[in-house]
Image 1 (cartoon, rainbow, N blue to C red):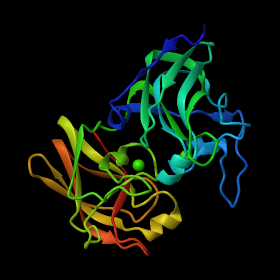
Image 2: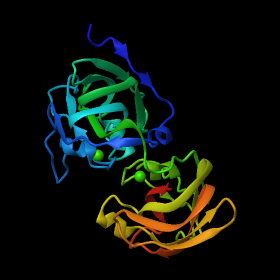
Image 3: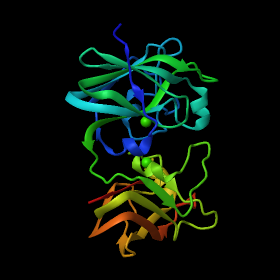
Amino acid sequence: MLFGLVATLLSAGLIASADAAVVKPTTWAASSSAPGSDGVSYDIANVADARQSSPWVEGDEGSGLGSWVLADFGGEKTLTGFTVWAGVWYTQEYWNRYNRPKLLVVEFSDGTSQEVTLTDEFKPQAITFASPKKTSSIKLKVKGIYAGNTFNDTGISEVVFHDAAAASHLPVKAYKTSSTFPADGDGNYEPVNTADGILDSMWCEGNKTGDGLSEWFELDLGGSQSVSKLVLRNGNAYSFGYFMKSNRATSASLTFSDGSSEAVTLKDSISEQTITFAPHTTSKVRVTFTGVKKGSEFNDLCISEAYVLP
Ligand SMILES: [Ca+2]
Ligand SMILES: [Ca+2]
C-alpha cells in the first residue's frame, strides 16, 4: 500500500532540530476546527503562531481519527523533517484531558507518504524523514491517538518544519545555568527552551529570593567559534500582558572562554533584539544579568529566546 515507509523517530530532541533552518508554510488548512468559546480559539492558525500554549483542535465527529492539518509552502522545498508539539499544551492538565496524536500519516505533494509514531510525552518531538524530501505541501493526518481523560477531541499545538540548510545561529551543544525554575503545571523552564523558536517557552532562573540579578546561563558551542552577536527575546514573550508581569533584563555581561567579557545593554522590549559586540573567538558564552526590570506580578527573570551568531 501507499503508506508503507515508516519514518525514523529522532531521539536527539530539540537541540538537534534547532540546528536546522526553519521553513515557514505560506498557508495552513485543516479538516475541521473545534468552535472557539470564551475568547479561546482552536483555529488552524494556532498550529503556527510560535506559541506552544495555543492549540489547533479538530472539530470532527468522534475522536479525531482521520482529521488532518495541511501546510502549503507556496512552492517546492526540500524538507528534512519537523518538530511537533502534539496534543493540547495549554497546561499539562489540559494536555492529559485531550486526545494526543499517536500515529501520523505524513503525505507529500507527490502523493507519497510516511507514517510516524509519536510518543505520549509532554515534550516537543523532532521527526526526521528517511531522506530529505522535495515537496510543496505536507499533510499530517491522524491515524491513531492516545485517549485524553476528559475530551474526545485531538489537538496539535505547534508544528515547525526544517530543511537541510544550517541555521544562521551557532548550534548550542549544551547549556549551564546558575539556577533554573522547577517545572510546574505549565511545563519546564530549562535553558534549551531559548532555542526552540517558541515565544511562550523560556528559561527562568530559580533563585527563590532574588529578582534575577547576577543569575546566568551559558551556551556551550562545542568548539571555538567567532561570536559577535546575541539575538534575544527578553522576558516572557508569550504576550505583552505576561511580558509586563514578569522580570526582564536591562543589562548583561557576556563572558568568553579566555576570560574576556563585554558589557551590553538590553532593551526592555518584547520584540526580538540583536546585540552586536566586538568579535570573540570562544567555545562558550556566559550571559550574566547585571540589570533587571521588575515585573508587576512574578519576581523571576525569564528569557524566551537566545542565540549567538558569528
Ligand atoms: Ca500554537
Ligand atoms: Ca522559547
